[in-house]
Length: 130
Image 1: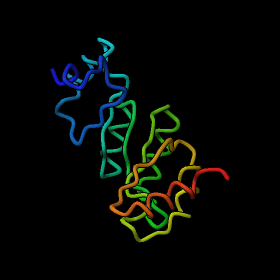
Image 2: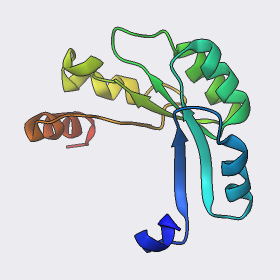
Image 3: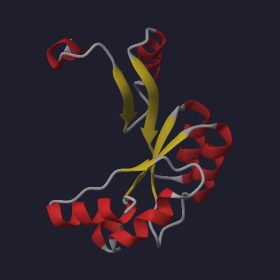
């Protein structure tokens, strides 16, 4: 089992790109091996379905793309975690736009992708107090 090779006895979160494995992941969750089951969603319809079936969702949200706000709001009402992806708009937005996004009700975290360590430091600095 991969977890044995990794030297761990459980996984905090498993995020799916699709829904085929949901039953298997819920079974692992019932055994205490997975804490939260989620999905990365790309449409409002998929996100609203995810709100009904998941513990956590990954949704695209940036300063100029609020298309998934309805999903974020529904997740917040239901207690489903939200992780943002594409928060800096694929590099189009400065790190200063990250703080307001992370303060949206229901948003818990963001995944920031970059190949430039300076950009990562800037993004972290934009949301780290003083």
